[in-house]
Image (cartoon, rainbow, N blue to C red; front, side):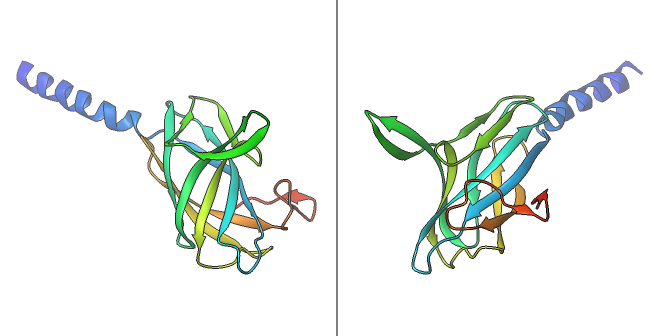
Length: 156
C-alpha cells in the first residue's frame, strides 16, 4: 500500500510544475494605427493582464509581417529612441500596458497595408503560459488609443 501512495505522491509532484505553467494571461484592447500603402513598419498596442504566476512575453508572430519585435521607447538625453528588448516581464496579478511612447510591438516587413476598420492576427508567446492569438483592430493613422465603436470599446 505504501508503494501505491508513494507512486501517487510522485505523480502529483510531477504534475504540479505543469499546472503552475498554465498561468492565465488576458490580452485587452489590441490595436494598431493604419499605415500608408508603402509603409513597411507599424506598431501594436495592448494591455496584458497576468492572472496567474509571474511570466514573460518572449516573442510575437504575425502572418502579415516578416518579424514582430518587442520595443521600448526611451529618452536618451532628450532624444526619443525605440529600442528592441528581449522580453517583457509580466508581474503576477498586474497589468502591463503597451502604448505609444512606452513598451510596444513593432511589426516589421509588413506584407500588407494596415487599413483602418480591419483587423489582423498576432500570436503572443510567453515563457510559461501557452501562446495566445488575438485579433488586432486597426484604427485611424494618428489614433491615440483604441477607437470607440457606437459608444463601446472594441474588444477582439
